Length: 284
Image 1 (cartoon, rainbow, N blue to C red):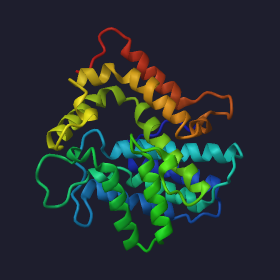
Image 2 (image 1 turned 90 degrees about the horizontal axis):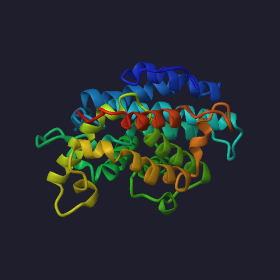
Image 3 (image 1 turned 45 degrees about the vertical axis):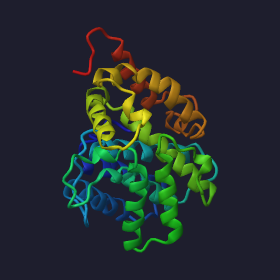
C-alpha cells in the first residue's frame, strides 16, 4: 500500500493512479490517465457541455477521487497476486472511466436551478450511465466499450445485483466488481467519513423532498445523528456481505501483502466505527 495521498487534490490522486497504471503496464499510453483526469475533473469543477459543476457536498469530487484511488490500488494488488483472468490495460482504462464518471448523475443541467444535485439520488446511477454514454460516444469510444463502462457504473447502485447486468466478458465483470468495491471502501475508510455523514443526511433529506411517492431508503433516517449511529449496522449487515457475495471478495486484493497481510482500508473503516463507540462522538 502506498503512503497517504490527499484525496482533495486531483493532481495527487492522478499521480498515484498513473504510477499504478504504468507499474502494471509499462508500455501503457503515458498520457491516458492525466488526460482522462483533466477531462472529468473539469466536469466536476467547471461544468461541461450542458451541465453545471457539482454542487453536492457528500457526493463531491473528493468522494469520486477516494474511490478512484482505491480502485487503482485494488487492481494493482490483483495483478501482483497473479489472479485470473489477467486484465489488459484497456480494462484498467475502462474501469478508471467508470469510477471517475460513476457519480456524474448528480450533475445538474445548465438551466436547472432548483435545489442541488442531491435531488437525483434515486436516479443518479442511471443518469451517470447516460452521461457516460453520451460523453464517451462524442469521444469516439466503441459501443462495446460504452456498454462496459455503463455496466460498471450500474454495479455501484445500492440495489443492483451484478449477476443481473449484461456483462460482455469476465474481465468486464471483475472490473465492475472492483469499481463497486472501491466506491464503498474509498468513502468509508476516509479520515473525514464520520464528519461528512451530516452532508449525506442532508442529501437524502433533499432527495426525499424532490422524489414523488414513498421511498423507504430516503425516508428511513430521522436525523444526521441517526445516520451516524446506524453506520455500524450498515457496514456489518449490508456492506460486508455485499463485498463478499455480490462483488466476489475482490477487496482482498488490497491485503498487503496478499493474501494474508493487513487490509488498510478495512482497518481504517474499523477505526472509524470504533470512534463511534467513543463517548461524545456525534454528527455535530
